[in-house]
Length: 255
Image 1 (cartoon, helix red, strand yellow):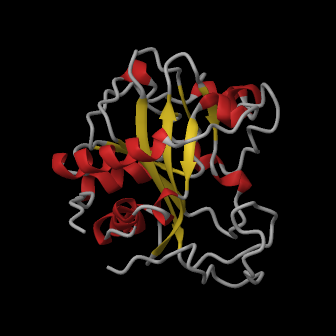
Image 2 (cartoon, rainbow, N blue to C red):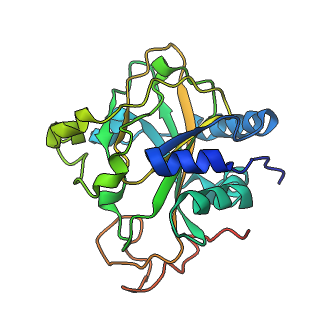
């Protein structure tokens, strides 16, 4: 399948390492993103929202979409995207796909995504992990584009969020407010942001009449070892503690 995606340049890689996040303009070309958007809409017509959880109040999701759709699978294992992820993560030779998602934020239905880190839940023995957040439609800032606390990835694990009301990172660590908050971003369809799994990030509510629609793929160091920590995605897969994630659920894209 013809998936046209570019590789990040040296300036973008450097910006990611410095800030903990970066914007990649026109990561995916217009024809490819048009095709992906149509496929996403087909999947989301059949989506049933899980009810009641804090995450579900912030956005709807269709998890592991690459396992059900060949186009999103081809994007997730794209050599250019995998090479970008490996270059951005310090001292990483290759990456594995951790998870893919379609994310939808309906106007009026979903609230703000509270500020959090991605990594505190993960069963990997190292935090070399990042997420590519690809806009499948134009996402002006007031539609709920992500915002990031610049440099927060240097402060290590700050604890889990989404365990109780009011446990966002700013409530737990008020000093984060001293860091620079990224400006509101206007994204075009095909643009992306990339953020480190230790970068504190969140998103405002969708104040437009249209639906915010995006695809995410998370990559982690292919040399990471399994810790055995309970985690729904890895429980029951037969992974062995202190060994790599050698399992079809975690493909290692070829360069």
